[in-house]
Image (tube, rainbow, N blue to C red; front, side):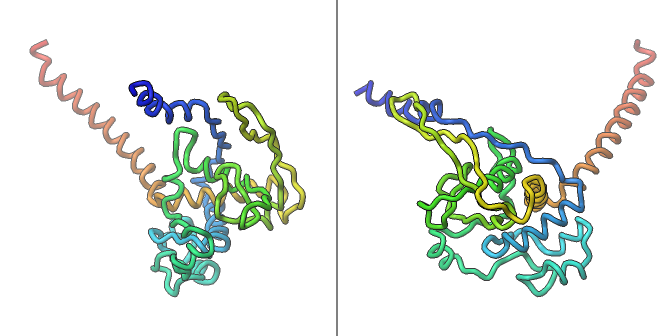
Length: 249
């Protein structure tokens, strides 16, 4: 009985030890690039906001990345009437669950929620959006290397093109077989070159990261001033201490 309990307790640990480690590509840091953030916002509104809401993000926050109210209204305001409204969608969760098997998640904090020991949330998203491949066995016809058997179809396929994944069977260390990814093969080119598509995805990821904390840029700038202020305060405090204790020492 004790041996059985020990095996049951250690099973999850052994499974993790023998599992294949998820490799994430490093996402380019475009957090300070307003042009990239604006392009990312355009991609998000045109390709993601049909199914995924961003209910903690308001359209008027796009002013922080250099867009005017007129630019927002004319180019990005598809799911609301006023720039002060949140980025919501018209699709009902009950309908989405029927169509996709589960309701698409809100993306306001997706970059923060996907952070893990394997990499940042931006790295996860950057790899995820570039590793869709054709899979006839899936209801949508698509699968993903990072998120296996994902219900989401590849909404950016017209930009990237269609690729298939090649796998080989390897020993899983427990007497069984496991699939090991080898390479992608492009079978239908998209409207973008691979380098241009990767750059566009990096823009989109930068915007998704921005949505998770729109105040991050200001916070970092304020942090520099705070550190400088603390440094000056330390110098003054140390000089005052020396003045008070000069007769003692």
